[in-house]
Image 1 (tube, helix red, strand yellow):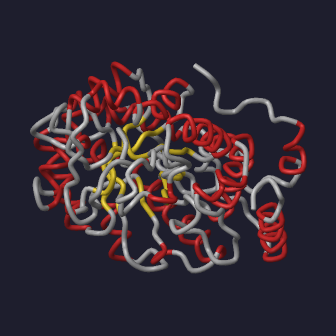
Image 2: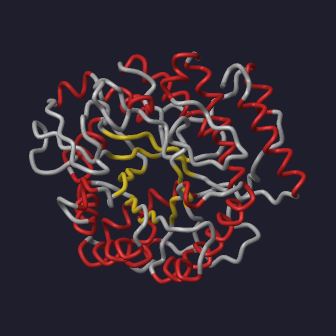
Length: 393
C-alpha cells in the first residue's frame, strides 16, 4: 500500500518551510477529557455516537446542541457555510466542539467540511479558496494538485477542521449532470485519477483526513440526489472500465475515507441505491477494491434517501451494507432517531467493527494551535500568498 505522506519534492520547499498551522500533539492535549474507553467498555449509545456525523445551525455551540452531543454521545460534526463567519470564530467553534466531544466520549471529534474549491467552498472569506477542479486541471499538471491539497489542508487546520470531504473522484461524463460539472477534474478516468490521487496525498500530508467521493461515481447522472434518486443503467463491467478506476487507485494508495453516492444502478442492485447496497459497499468496495478505510455516507437527509427509505431506516440499511459513518446535515431529531435505530437494530459486534476503524483514524489527530491575534493574521496572510502562487492559482 502506498503512503499518503511521501517525501516532499524540492518544488514544495517554499510551502513546507512555513510555520506549521497546527500543533502535532494529540487533539486532546490541554482539554478536559475523559479517558478513552476500550470498545468493549463502551455502551451501544456510545458506539453509535462515534458513527454519526451531525450538522447544526448557527456560528457557535449553543447549550441545546451541546446537550444533544452529550446526551447521544455524538462523536463528529459537519460544518457548512451557515456555521462559518471568520477564521477566529471557526477556531473557537471547533475548540468548543472538541472539548464537548472529548469530555463526553474520551475521543477527539472529526470536524468535517466539503472544501473542494470553486462553488463548493466552506472556508472563511479571509482565506483564498482554490478554483473549481475542472478549471484547475485545465491550467495545471497533476503534481500541482498535491500542492493545492497541502494548501487546503493548512487552511482547514488553521480553522480547526480535521476532515475534508474531498477530492471529488467522479468523472463528468454526462453533460446534463446538474450536480457534478466543474467539480470533477475531467471527463475520463485517465484525466481524473492523477489529480485526485495527488490532491488526496497533499491533504493527508497536511494532517487532514480526506474522503474521496461519490462512490461508485456520480458523473453520469442527470438528476441531483439532493432532490431525487438518480438512476444509471450501467453494468458492473462498464463501471469497472470507467467510474471505478479513480476509486480503485485511491483505495490502493490508502485513502482514509470514501463517501458513497445515493444512486440506483438497477443492473447491479435492483433494490437499493449504492449507499444502502451490500453489493456496492461490501462486495465491490471492500472485497474487490480492497478498501480498508472508513466508508462514510453522503447526507442521509437528502431526498434520495429520506423520501424512499426514511432517514433512520436508511441508516440501518447503510450500516448493514457496510457503511461505517452516517452523515446527517442538520436535523437533531433525525440524528437521535438514527442513534436509537443503531442501538436497537444493529448488533454490538457490527457497531464495534466500524468504531475500531473510526478510532484508529482519529488517533493522533492534531490539536488547534494556540495563536495570538498577530500570529493568526500572519498565518492567514501566508496561506493567501501561497494561494496566489503560479502552481495553484
